[in-house]
Image 1: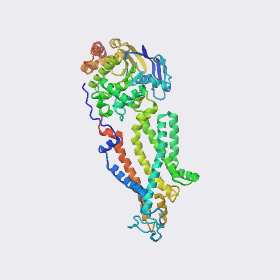
Image 2: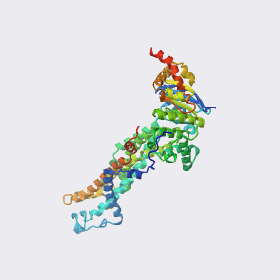
Image 3: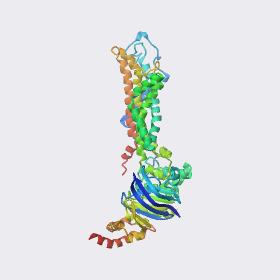
Image 4: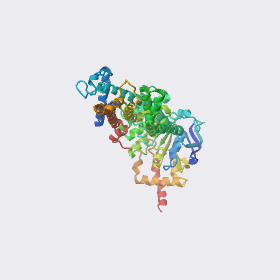
Length: 292
Length: 296
């Protein structure tokens, strides 16, 4: 069943279109990757899906959440779906967590809000979630402040916070970009595990093709606010139709060949047959053509 | 799992933050100076060397002595008694004015930061008008209408300071509203009011507390000025400002009568400013985080 669907989503600032005719569809367990360079409108699209466009920006088109158009929904209606149907994790986990609030209280926040739990119950659930995102020593960690834990741990906290109320769609906006490569792989493996466990649909936003390719089954490629390519991940990676997608695949393959271990997702199931293994094959022909 | 273990998990409390070695010299000096003034005010509640209006005609304009530690004025009233009671007035008026200023300024600043551009512009306009309007003029206006009283002085000073408080609150809160964690809270469906309570206020109260300390100093000076002009605390209630004014005519014979109330005002204000500086260093979460050297 489709949870989230947009058609003709256009975002404008003072009449100037920033995103044009965006279309995407997410059903349970879907894993969609949204790729594009910075400024291509990926993050704006994500914010529009949550009804959180910055002041002055307008969205037209349709944003269907459980079949209901939310484009002009009231604040109250939006708040009902935020956190409960749709949730989001951000690029920089240090700034996405309140520096003065303990980890436990941050995870417990949405639980108290949406499920009306009291402080003690919410805290217990927060500890459960710390276990589920594999944070060490949750009993103690829930009392830590964000700056007292590592970057990877912070992103685990952000994930726990986003998934706490069992949303059906998780929007991950460059969730691994701010992390170093080994931690990045751990977070990707965790995401994979959590998706399998909870059945949440994933919209993974990144400018980093190899990272997206490892996780997504369906790829959307954006450039200058437009969707330039959309299709099954395998097809897009093997036979990119647009010039831009071809360019992306080729450069990613080059980087991957230079450092083949950097995107090794190792022990994780499902990613172990990493699509990246197939990447060098494409670029063999791709790079030769490109280097002339 | 190859995660870094949790480093330390103390429960953060203001008390512990201070105990962790943030007693800077200015904090100590400020606390000592203000503590002395506060001690005078508190002791005056139960004991003063003489009665407030206990005039001793045969000891007029006498200099500091064993009987009269700060000398006497031209009516033979003990000046130390007046100083002690004046401290009480200064602190009371200062505290009340700051309370008025914050009760008006903080909600106004938060409203401007949280609401849309229209409300924001309106509040900024209001702030500019109040800042441009001299506090003294406001006080004179209010005194003309309501007569000179401590309450009128408190309102005049409080309204005057509230503009600055509103401006600072608005700027600090706006900065927090643009933070990722506020956006993250909104993606979880948190109500605007809860964002204020859970995220904005906890992140700006340090700044506001420092501002309150500095505003207290300004209020003490303002109270003394208004009383000096006869617009503040009316007789017989003692006030440092009126002591100055009364001693003015006899300054050539009894300079200490001018010197001591002036000194009292100066000590109080310097103490409050030092305390504010010390608190800023001790409480500012930004400085605290930088000191721990967290990679950003």
